Image 1 (cartoon, rainbow, N blue to C red):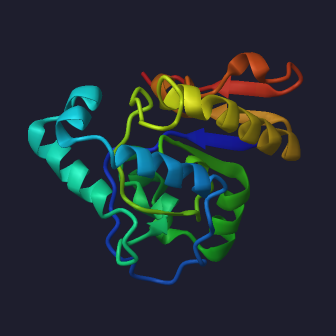
Image 2: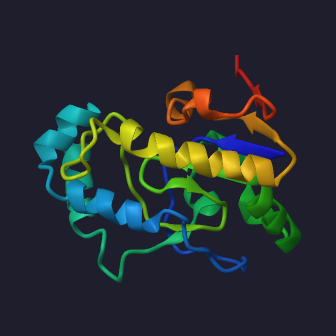
Amino acid sequence: MITLLSPTRTMNISPVSGTYPPATTPQFLSEAERIISGVKKLSAKELEGQMNLSQKIAENDFHHFQQFDLPTTIQKQAVLAYSGTIYQKLDASTFKEKDFLYAQQHLRIISTLYGILRPLDAIKAYRLMFSLKVPDLGTKDLYQFWQPIITKALIDDIVADDGILINLASEEIFKSIDISKVPNHLKIIHIKFK
């Protein structure tokens, strides 16, 4: 069984305290680098308009993206970096090594920047929306860029496991998957939070 989560806009990229398994490399790192290269061409005003941000947040994000590639930019395992409610309840900081290894095999996080992540994949702090039009990608938005990539990767993971996906992702994030491409023999269980 693969469990699918959304990313969160809130992140904590401060250095980790404690001992955790080493970080892994995101599967679609080269695609993420292409996105960052394009996002750097957007002004703070364009980020503000396209992502409906406040001027202050857009300016912070703009400066953050300009420094994204610096070797001093901190990276952290995805499951420890996201800090929204679901990640607070998951409380990965208390995982034992066997828990991390289980999660690495059975948990996936859809990401607007990295496509699809495993819990131990090293990521940097970012704020992007799938609706963003990124220069030089040749697509209408990040949905169109990521949909074939995420869909194939997720299908491969579900098939390699037991054929079942538990979808805990938001509707907005789940739209990054082309559900029409998922073979009928795979089972997707959608959880609705009320």
